[in-house]
Length: 226
Image 1: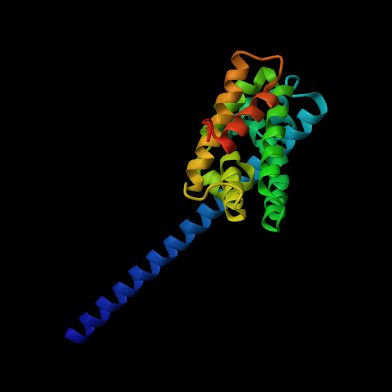
Image 2: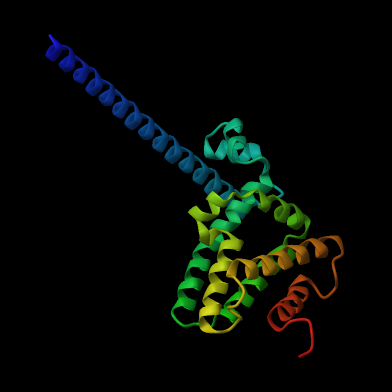
């Protein structure tokens, strides 16, 4: 009789383990499926918005037009984006991601990092100059990006790209390496944000590109005389 009880207990334990494993597997499967489905929906919204923005211009395109063309509900749009500005940021990031990846590969292959960095900053500032009306909103909305998003697609985000590029510059001996890369990126990224917001409030005839070029000079050379 004791053997029967022990056997029954073993069967019960094995059954519990089986059902726990099954439930865990099913849960993870559906979670992965949901994540994949959300990623596809977000990608569809981005590609649709990009096509409409390219054809009609940002100001002429409404959220209603985006969701109609993407064949999703308006509620679905607002699960991913609070405003039209936020989807524009994703569109712009997508457009620059491949160029960022190629730039990092080129620098890793021996191309000097500093000119690449200067060209990148100039392109960013030129974009803000060309889109002066929404520049401030774009900068402020970009702060909503999570660390997880940056980690998943580093080439899409300025902060991750700057860190990678500055790390390569340190390896090349172009900039000091006694300061952590994250701190250098924080100073440069903060200077870029401040320059754009300052320019939005008080545009100068010389333009944002020239203003940021002066900021870069101070960043690389320092503010004090040797």
